[in-house]
Length: 250
Image (tube, one colour):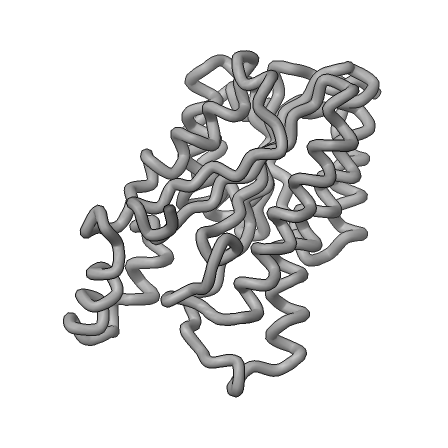
């Protein structure tokens, strides 16, 4: 089945950066297929988008590969995405490696890397058939260098996303498909603000002090670069990692 240039599938679309990506792509005229495990949250985004949400949201946990296979297989031909935004992930637990276990690594890989692998392999064949596609993976500053805000398991998983992005970019470029990553720094999503709400003011100030811009990024700033890589005019940009981090990693 051939992918549609005017349809985007966005994972993690129930909140935060990816909900804003869905809104912005919808405002550009794309039909949006929303995917999130939180039925209530993603339902609110679907209601906000109205008829730009081209079908009922896919309520799926991205760590369940079989469920993802079923969800993608359920898409009608007119809903096969030419644009894929892989946005699930994140870990706000700043823990030393001496306190981590193999279970922590498996969880980080399942949420941040395996989900990207599965969604890309499921959606890419229709893009190949169409001769056109855009894949944008949300990496992290943590995958570019060390992290002051998370842990080694998360860093390893996000570094894997970057490596996967580059290999897919190489393989899919002859088919008119671009594959890029956006490595965000600390973005002031509701999830991040909740995670830091109970921290002492000095704890937060110390961490924000490491950011040259002196503040969190906004959700709008985070989503804007993702959407840029989804467009027609991004056709010669592939295999890149775009840093959106206020100078935290340069």
